[in-house]
Amino acid sequence: VDPALAEIRQAEAWLASLGCHEAAFQARLTAAQTYVLSELYGAALQQIDRLGESAMAPRESRFWALNMKGSTHYFLAEASGEVAGPHREASLQCHHEALALAQALGRVSFEYRSLVNVAIGEARQGQPDQALAFVARLVALRQGPAFDLGEGLIADAPPGQSSYWVDYVRALVSLQQEGIGQALHRLEQLGDRLQTVDPHDFLGRLRERVLHLIAETAVQAGDHVKSGQDAQVVCRLEHSHLVVQFVKLHLSTPQQRSLRPRQCERRTSRRANRPRS
Figure (cartoon, one colour):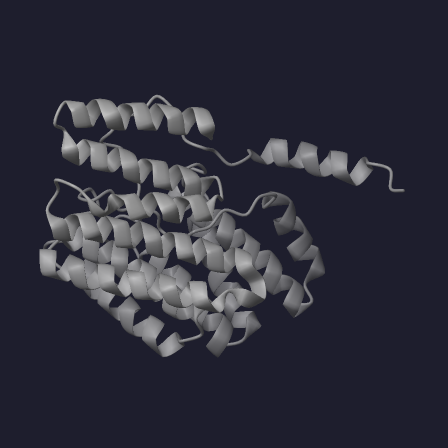
């Protein structure tokens, strides 16, 4: 983490000295994302607080800061167990504010990103009706003439297919409303659709999260054989919540990657064969 952050800070200082303030802002946000991916959430929040000053349009700058801050609080909630409540509320508030800014800016990609985050947040808060209401808005936005997957780097299924994120939120809601059997069916269908995605991008992380939920849900249903098979695939859980991804500014540090399945199997095998005291 430290070498990557050092290079990002050097890039930020160099870009700022050249007067490239927008790119320097993106470098600062990339540093915050690096902390998040390294699960250093407290440091990420401190870095996000540095994002207040920017030469970008004020509302657009605030949108990215709110988006990242909401995602960071979401990850803190996922890692906090019984004390997750305050972080879930903070995350949802940030994403609601980001959604309002996206609509004011008239940026469809920003609005889409925020709707995904809000829908997931409402579902995780145990508010299925609100989550489905935002899902309906997502579906309508995807069908609109201004929707473009390429604009804003939205990671999702191509037009003409059901959104991966919509199906994920519906599966989360299904866990609360339809029972374990139907929820498991929805998760398995989504997992099948995600088999061909790049395991190292956001959709790859979504697939890992879906596989984890399949294993978890199958255990609740008593399907221990199936859950054991899926659990071997998911040796490291990555969060599926959308985090801001910038590829316009190419830094020399490689993107953090999840363990490949063969690596997972070898590590799982070593742990299984290790003698217990």
